[in-house]
Amino acid sequence: MRSSSSSFRARIAAALLASAATVGALLTAAAPAAHAADTPLRDLGAAKGKVIGTAVTGSKLTGTYGDIAGTQFGSLTPGNAMKWGSVEPTQGTFNWAEADQIVAFAQAHNQQVRGHTLVWHSQNPGWLTNGSWTSAQLSTLLQNHIDTEVGRYKGRIAAWDVVNEPFNEDGTYRSTLWYNGLGADYIATALTRARAADPAAKLYINDYNVEGVNAKSTALYNLVKSLKERGVPIDGVGLQAHLILGQVPSTLQQNIQRFADLGVDVAITELDIRMTLPSDSTKLAQQKADYKAVTAACVAVARCVNFTVWGFTDSDSWVESTFPGQGAATPYDANYAPKPAYYGISEALGGTTTPPPTGACTAAYSVGSQWNTGFTGNVTISCSGASLSSWRVSWTYGAGQQITQAWNATCTQSGAAVSCQNASYNGTVPDGGSVSFGFNASWSGSNPVPTVTLG
Image 1: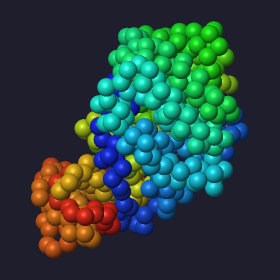
Image 2 (image 1 turned 180 degrees about the vertical axis):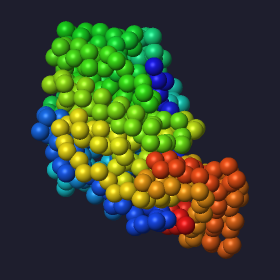
Image 3 (image 1 turned 90 degrees about the vertical axis):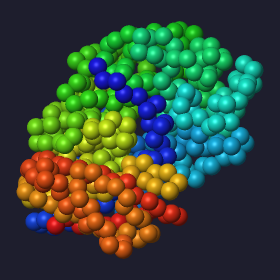
Image 4 (image 1 turned 90 degrees about the horizontal axis):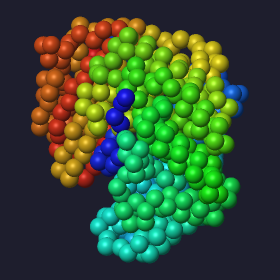
């Protein structure tokens, strides 16, 4: 069983907001455009009664990223923009900019929005977590927050992840600000308040490690059953599905079905499938099979209504910064080219695909973490239909950034120009494989992403 949690994302949320990637030049041919199925995923899903979605970062909804997000997906989930710490960083002072941007983009592209998330133990503002509240005060804060956020987007949000990650692995309630201050009924209170604020929105409880039948998913099952018996509004359960390569639970479809049999909808809400890096053709083939299996399990159950990947491109994924040495978890690579995993989803939805062009090696640059005076960067060189026996990557910084240390490559910098070449042990990049190197650098004022050249 995998051990992944959205709560890990809290530690790196700010860093992920700074993450970026750029398409590298090819060694042998022009860079392949993002090649997709003959029919977009959103249309294939609609034909099966499924809404196919992705988590997004609002600031990136332009260019190729925006084109793919708008064309391929019928639902958007704000990765961080609707969490309490984002929308109310200071008590009574609200910042809706990124959340509004995502909602507006979705409306312009005829997409649903999945609100994420109203009540969670993580990514809360310091004024809330560090406060000394009575139960009555805490209840008022909770209800006012739900009234404000759900009310703001009334009629524009299809579904809300109202309560996120309420359980421990053994099925007991997680010790949180909410549970400790209000008891288990904070969940019923939150759902009831959300229903009053927007009667049309579907209300979900969302958790991780609940994809298969186990103690945690059974606790969630029993909670949903109890809430329905009590008349508390609950429309669905979200299975996050942050999975590990080759470890799709064998009881996934059975588990989806048992929740559906309670009379609620089910959503795959945060799917990614991580692997040990570097990726290669064998791992990518297994990842395709895993994505196809998860999609097929959802297709097989009528009440599995939404299938959302947690970011569609590896350049926007939380995985590499959270699980060192692991990554390549999404359906698109860092250069926005669809991976075999993309075609696994498409095939499970009944799509026919045209194979992507081959013969390309690319380099993608990303920022892993950033602090006041410095940042950690990463460059990944990937090949598909081609191979390399050595490599050199170069770029020009536009804001005075200076590399101070590098690993898995030899890097030199002259003025703004940077050149990095392979170490003695990682010059070979096989067809279907990749290698990465990292570096630390200083910055001041801004840290724009440079254009990277491979060759």
